[in-house]
Image 1 (cartoon, rainbow, N blue to C red):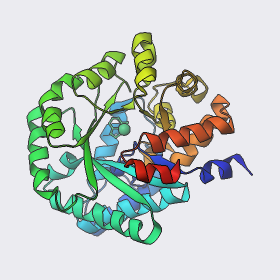
Image 2: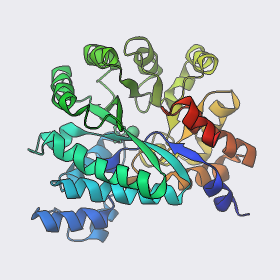
Image 3: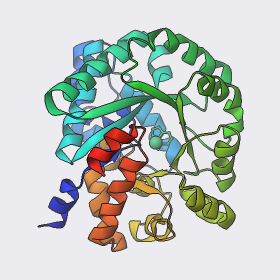
Image 4: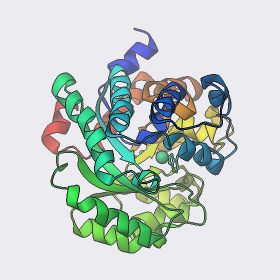
Length: 330
Ligand code: ADE
Ligand code: ZN
């Protein structure tokens, strides 16, 4: 079989995926037209041509602008449906989907609209295609902890209605200057409520942010975590405790975290025994879905088929599925 076919056939989970980052330019234009929103781009092609980023912030500016076309429940449903269908085509059996409610509630979109739209697509794909998925509500770290806390409190009344889907919280957006310790209280609150905890750390920020996300926020997984390699003692700890890293190779390439994929540390960390997983982050912006990320790494880093299978197994093992569901794919 071809390498692409081999990768597609591996049962895998996607654990680091921002649903707003799955909005393809075509859908952004369609939703803008439907909602009467003017875009500062003349066409799908000129928008796509603007996807040349120098760092995380230059991407985030475009990503939040793109998300502004999402208004109705139908919009959130269409976005989520398109992603889940694309993921299934890559052999994804389970997806843990982050969303940024503050991006939408700040524009007057109701929390319920966001949940209801995503849930319709997620439940439909569970019924019709057997694809399981969960939601991780992600706080924007460039905003205050108080705003994060208000967002959590705003979502809590919906917890029961979406308890088959909403399992955890995360932390994303501009990392440098917004360290984990800024969010200790809101993570403490979410932990007390029984939510699963993840946070972006060590994408552009230093290894100390990874350490603090573990020690001060008590997260169970680190999103990205590629800066951990700069601190050998931390790296040893990640290996020893098998703390999952949700690595996003094409994202790191597009945001200039690594100058080229051949220099990416995914293979080094994997070969040290770290619990590394491969994910797409914001596939519509970074030029590839999860299968593309596996394939690009296989080529650039010389990953063997056994290593690719190990990465896919890691993704199932590191998921928030219960053990019985994990066993179906392991
Ligand atoms: N939001 C969406 N993608 C992100 C990333 N790669 N890092 C931080 N925040 C994000
Ligand atoms: Zn991310």
